Length: 262
Image 1 (cartoon, one colour):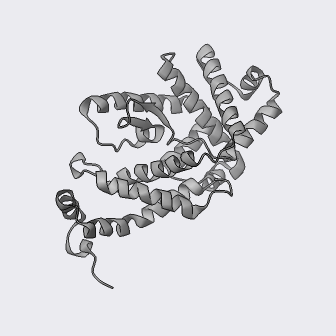
Image 2 (cartoon, rainbow, N blue to C red):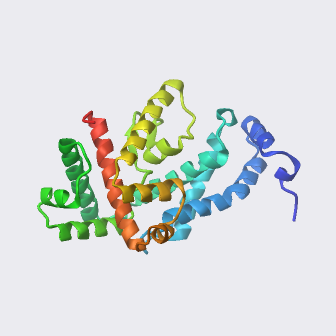
Image 3 (tube, one colour):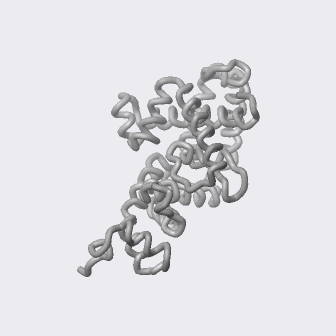
């Protein structure tokens, strides 16, 4: 087996060279080096996805994200490439999933209805609201509301990679971006995004305790839904439902932020 360029030079030296000459050999070296990262991120996304989604498809989508990360990475920003690439890979996967529009329209409609209900009620009350309050607002009984959450969670459509803040095409921000913050930004945009990160942290801290734990374990500690279930001693499907509830709350609160209510 031939020597890799990484056997001859440091990764930092290769990045510096690649910025200058775009040598395809260096690019291919980075692709081979970080291909396992694509599979890792695809595996995280695949966890809990419906059976209609193929793991190999997610890997293919993520590979485009890796290529994009390699082209746009800048050593001068003092961010590890792995951190930067994870966001690009995950974003590429969700972009493609959204573009294929595989979620039934009826489910998307339910998501909008529940988000709007939570947003309205929490703006009125200034606190997290209960399932019963949301169900009453939606003119459902609590059992019907729980079934709705189960149906939504089964699609795994709610993601921290959904764009919730956007100035122009080059100034998009997902909730995950606000947590990991690896982007190369202009100073004025960075100041604005630091404020957005603060808001996201506040929103997560306002979640009911179990939902907050699930968000932290899944998005910060990198545990799978199954592993979280073992930690909290609940079923994987229950973790999925609570994660869905947490995401609905987060997105509804951020909607209120954008409206200037909070």
